[in-house]
Length: 320
Image 1 (tube, rainbow, N blue to C red):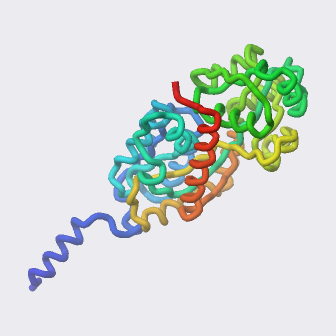
Image 2 (tube, rainbow, N blue to C red):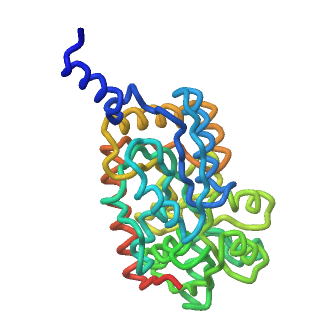
Image 3 (cartoon, rainbow, N blue to C red):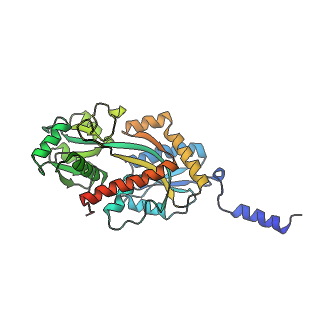
């Protein structure tokens, strides 16, 4: 006959919250993407999510919650129950927003649990096909000779294309006039048409225009040339030292996520991102698999927060 203590133990065991990675996931997992469908963040969430669904036996659902430069989606995750059933794929604006906007509904360090960084995509500096700048050295020479007259577009004030442009201005010692647009698409269209002189674009958005001769790529923001676009020289090769800027993508959960869940998720997501077919699909998007496990991802976020915060402050960038 069971004692009262045994009965209580069984009841508690049945009703207690998840205590080990072996019990996770217990139901479908929602992965928040803070942008509309079709962008790089969304595609990464869907590619990796399918692998996790196949591997862990629960559906990893992508939930697009666009708006406010990614802050709506981030706030949803920050306020979610920390049980591993609500995640997000964060990207670079996650750490830029707190410096650009007066009110941000989350703290990127305090309100989240870093799980794993999975990929990165460097930006490329592009100019119209008819530009007199045949290479980066030409562009810098022209910008110095015509201070303030050369324009540089962006996807909007505080966007990655904007803050990287400001970093370039500082490192190259040039004065370019910023022209913000409402999204990367309109900015690319204006540069392609010759209405604006230059733009730091993501590779997926600009590569086809470069390869069809409608744009010219002057440099890629990596220390070494990227295998998928090896024909594009690095910004450093063009004469700008210590220039490394990329959009990164990584999984985050709410603060307080159990270590057992973090360990299981980071291991499984990293495994998925390293699969040959996933790496091939990433490469086709201009992405490189870049794995940072939790202990390395956490200081990486802090470093990125400071790096871009310093750029935003020095350039006096304020959201419209």
